[in-house]
Image (cartoon, rainbow, N blue to C red):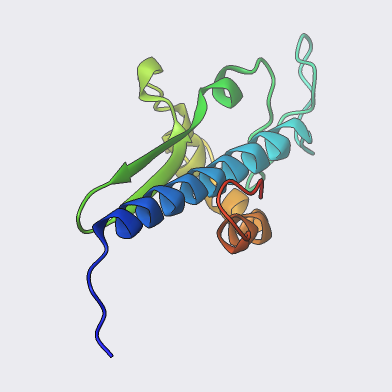
Amino acid sequence: MTFKRNDKFNAGLRVEIGRRAVRAAEAVRDTARARMDAGGSGESYSGEPRRSSADGESPVNQRGTLSDSLTAYGPRIDDRKIEAAMGASADNNNYTIMWLEHGTARMAPRPLLFPSLIEARPLVLKAFAAKGAGDGA
């Protein structure tokens, strides 16, 4: 038995994988936003709606600037790979996520992206395991 290359099928498959990759990135983004909305166990500051995050906790959403900048990107499809990503929008020159994620000389890390990926793992797997084109995972 021989199989012929089916470019139309391959192109459609790559598009569908790209869609699912974006759904997975959106699941991680939504999980990150939910983690930020949960509040922290750190200090309470007057004028802030929630307790701040303590060292090692995910950052807390106080004004929505960081949460609003979280974006799912993609898909990017070329001959070698299909990718989607989630991160803070570069439109704002947003270094805040990097400072929070890794800490600074004066602030302990408040990781958000990696813990969100771990927490969203079941949703990421579901996005790729859905049956049929266009399934809402």
